[in-house]
Length: 109
Image (cartoon, rainbow, N blue to C red; front, side, top):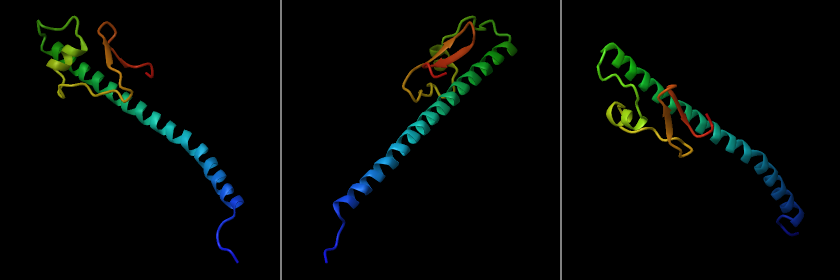
């Protein structure tokens, strides 16, 4: 008597593995996208919080140098504790609109 698997048994195992992979891979991709989104949201919240603290400090000090326009690069270089912005998981740069106080990145926000 021969020992081993028949061709049909091997094909069935391969088909089952392919079905499981077809179900699992999209779920893992969604998890990665969700993690990237959460990281980006956290980074934007950190930048917004730092900007709010900066503007509050300038208002309390009643500084003559209160910024009427502030770019994100100037803020990061001179006032952001980390001295560099966190990077967006999608590899895009964060942008800041002084007129609205809005911090955004990419089109996912």
